[in-house]
Amino acid sequence: MSSKILVDELAGKTAAGNITVTSEGGSATMQLQQGLAKAFGSFDQRGDKIAANTAGDTFNISSISDTGAGFISTSLTNSMSSTEYSSVSNIHYSALGADSIYARFSASSAYTSSSFTTVGVYVNGTAQDGYFTLNVHGDLA
Image: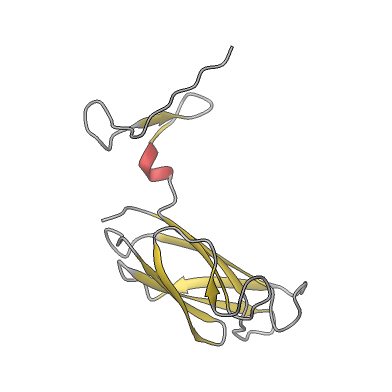
């Protein structure tokens, strides 16, 4: 027998935002809102996956723009509470070929509470255009 809970909103009993979730092992707890992604999105500079210089599926992102070879700027719809949040990114595809096996990494910087910049760099050390995916975790303002 299975159960289903249908609700439109969750609120903590002692405080609206205080919903505790117990870990699978039962020994740790965390606040539900801390584990939720605060923003996510994708952006293709080259047009390998979606139209060039176009944002794909996004959540809490007002815009993503191409700011140079391998660089994108992301603006959030709802600001974070500070500049101390985590932006996790990845870059796929490149001028080296859509199925490139070359090592690559991406990193974000220039954090403000409402925006950040991400760069994609390949094994040869140069920033190159690509298809970026982004996730943001931290506290909303």
